[in-house]
Image (cartoon, rainbow, N blue to C red; front, side, top):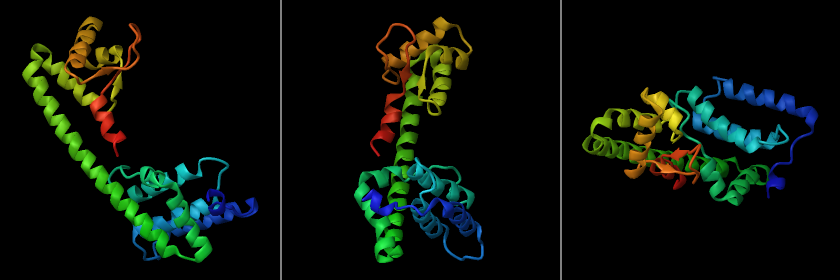
Length: 217
């Protein structure tokens, strides 16, 4: 089905077609809601099939960046890959209907369902993250004693970069390697961090509960 959808135009037309697509996205005289506009643009980009590889990824990223540019999103937090990948044949079928049946409306309905579902999942995930953060802050304050300050400092970092090693902890907390290693051990014993290499040296630790929230979506 992918080949049936992505029959690209001859290469001599690609530059002109991408130029037209860019003009469409930036033409403020076209009074179309941003979500509809980027839905059309995504279809068109995938049809032009501009690159030898990576068209799907770039086309999905285009959605997010356009919505940020249009101030629909404050940050690039809406990424439709999971929705499209969940049922690839449906994704390709809806794209193909535009070409084979001149049915842009069906594609846009499917696209907007994807935006809705992805946004709802993102909202639910954010709520779970906030609950996790609050629970762990309370756990650290109640059980880590004199290490609670550095543990709380490290926790904030883990929500930005959930995979760490001891030398990073040493830099974050501005302590000795031994103190950083002891702090990591405390976080492992508390179930906050999990060692993922199984080695005695060059160990890497992961904030497992946090990452698992994204795997479930």
